Each structure stands twice: as C-alpha cells, then as structure tokens.
Length: 245
Image (cartoon, rainbow, N blue to C red):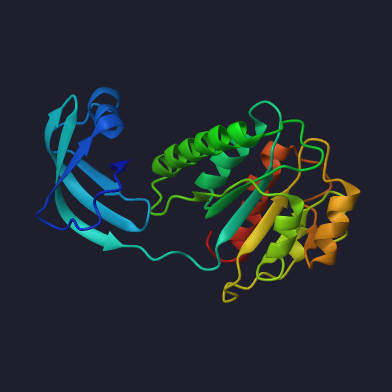
C-alpha cells in the first residue's frame, strides 16, 4: 500500500500538477519514511480530496509529488460521533486514536461528573489541540480521506441537546438492550452519537438527563469495558450494522 500524506493546500491540484510537501510532512516523508524518487504515494487534504502521484524530488525540507490521479470522496451518511468522557492517564487518548482508525467522523470531549481529569480554560485549549494532533496522525495512518473533527469540550446539557437532532446512544453496562439489537438504518441521515463515560461510569443524574432528552441506553455485552475500549468496540458494532464492514 502506498504511503499517505496530508496537506491542506492541495484542493485545486489535479493530474499533471506538482504538489509540494513542506514542514513536518516533508520531514516525515524524507527523513522518517525515506521515500524515493518514482515511489507511488497518496496525498489528501482531510476534507475528501484524494490525490495519487509519484515522488519527483526529495529534499530534507521539501518533497515534490507529480499528481497522476484525483478523486473527491464525499462524506459518509450517517456521521458517526464519539462523545468521549475525559479520563485519567492516556485512556481517553487511546480511545480517540482507535476510534479514528475505525471510522469516527467527529470526536467530542466530555467533562463528565465523574471524570478524574478536569480541563479548565487553558487545559481545554491545549487538550483539544493534542486530541486533534492524535486524530490527524491516526487518520493519516489509516489512509482516511476525511479527518475527524475534534469539537469544543461539552457538558452534559450540551450533549442532551443533541438528542433532538441526532440518534444519541449512551453506552451503559446496566442497560437492558444490547447495542447489536438496536435498529440502525443506513438511510437515516441523523448522526449516530455514541456516549462513553469515564472510569467511574456515568452518574445517575447524567443518565437521567440524557434519557429525558431522548437518548437511548445500550450495553455492549456482559463484560464491563474500560473507557478506552468501549467507544472503539461500539464503532465496530455500528460499522457492521450499517453494512460498512
């Protein structure tokens, strides 16, 4: 499989044009992946543009790619959204990395009542930037034509508000219904929003607030999964239900 790189400035490029990688992407291509002249690669802008080309020149700070083909990949419907509660250590980061590889379209940091990790204004800005970097690298590794969005951190009330326009499913080990039993129609244009709580679980008052707003509760099985595992596993189930896998 050809190596894949991401450059936001390729929107107007097409067959015959030369795309120039600079900065971190050029360093990654030249010094880390050690691309060679004539090697086939792909380049995307993270917003659906997909170029195929061949390496024409390699310098430490500049890599030139001659474009041979262009494709515009439309966004998928329904969109898959992961609301990931902030968690201690790197568990939330592990979750969003895997979720990106598994096809999530948007990631929402959630300051849940039982989240051990807390983001103030300064931490929220840095945290979101770090999550965006993790998502971008995971999307590149997975050869995704669309890079998932990382939203502003939200509270429970904001997530409940989404239930009016989206299919919100709260992953809760005590729920009666299994996620695999919920009818998910591929022709339903509403976002599918999967809500994952922190290590201590979702607080009863949060479950009640989300339920009152119209959210559904579902469990993944008889086991209780870590917050780093639940979201990716749920995405796998949803991908099968939608016929994407």
